[in-house]
Image (cartoon, rainbow, N blue to C red; front, side):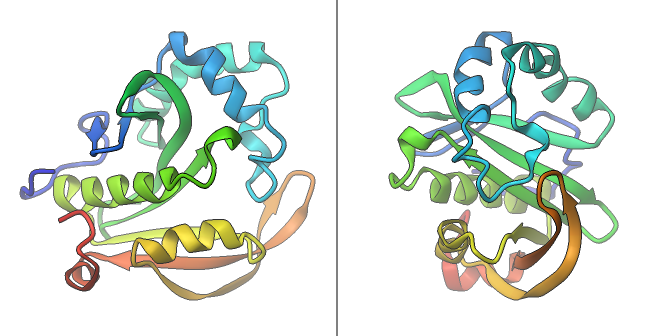
Length: 199
């Protein structure tokens, strides 16, 4: 990933390639594969329910907005994660949102098809996003929030050098759960010398 002076997150839709994965814009051709991810109850065990799809029709109506309206309105980057050896099949999502250009901060998230858990794909996706955000966009702070019981996701963040900042008590309302506590994790660009993230 080439290092430069940085640009706005919404200037160009991300297209990120590592040795093992590709993060790219999704199209209608990705609907079936993406539905396998977003309709799985286990994928959403520790995630907010707003993308949990029960009907493929919901996704068909929404998928064009992932790279279109949401992106143009500067609200949300929702990209597909693919294996580098199988770039046509989406096996997860990479998310970048709550971008604050003044603070130079952004939040990230990720969802992986249950059949691909335990293969380091989430860890690689976070590595890819942090490298892109630090080196291409020039972000200073990347953060992620996690349910306290989501040990798997916390391990992914720790492997990428994120630090736990603390517990946010009853900070968000999740459909089906009510008020939830979330742990805050962050990685600063200045931290990367110790962890070689995105270098």
